[in-house]
Length: 100
Ligand SMILES: [Zn+2]
Image (cartoon, rainbow, N blue to C red; front, top):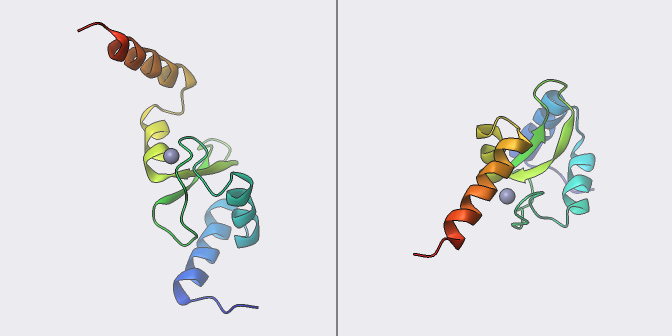
């Protein structure tokens, strides 16, 4: 078995404490997502990596997936609202497809 670095041990402990996730479950979730962000599909670096976020429901604390920092911030700014995110996507499509 590979010995964990101090930083990896801290990360492992934080995952368990904050989200109830073992490092093995966390790694399996990333692997199940093809080692990429659950939204933009950007490749995720192996943990511990500050650009990798555990997406979770702020009401129930249920872990929903693993995201890059940009996508995690995006859905947070949209207050986890599919309606806001769809409206933003529609807005951008309208603007991008608008004849100039
Ligand atoms: Zn992303």
